[in-house]
Image (cartoon, rainbow, N blue to C red; front, top):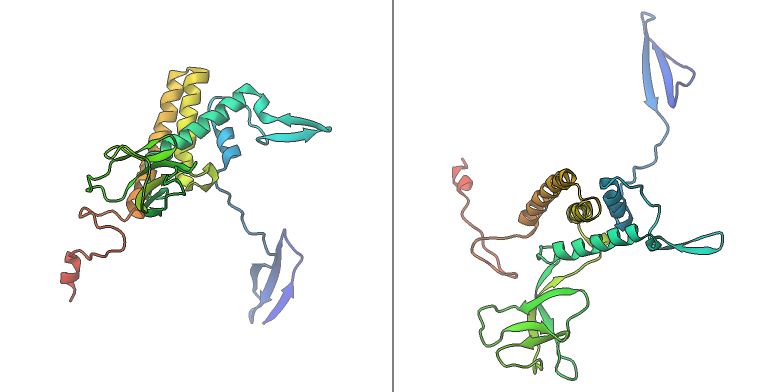
Length: 246
């Protein structure tokens, strides 16, 4: 059996194998390496462009300040872009304020400062004491600090363990939540800028689909159980299918 190299066809080399009966057999092989596919998740720019596309507006190439012929130009000088970006930030806060598994952290130890205050960080949406059954304290946010409504003070004499709902930047949010945030902002833009009821309903369907995906993520990622077992504990429930093993 002999092998004869044929001219290239596209990016393939064709080889002809001549067997014992002289019947050619063609075999092709891709010798050229292809560049790996780059997949990017959403960011603020793509989210703003999605919202602009939803209301029938042209996309932008960048957000923030850029230079053209030594002139500094800000994308936010366009009031529509500034308004849509504001809607995106508002929707980001609203979605994360619900408290999902990706931005909720339990039993975080907080230490009072020199004045006895436990301050709210700028990226904290909600904070409550970990032990919810302890009625000796009832805390809220007041003057940017953790305030106890039972003892009527914001001065703490010991460390406290709290549950925190954090606020993350849009780029740090899981991709499925980015879609939910984007669709919610798009619905608000369609309501306030276009006032097209049919468009609002269509975007609302997409938002509901994205929310269903987020709930699926929450069920898988949250490790929830009806017994309410906390962290640093383990419970193995009865599994009927194990008894069927032979």
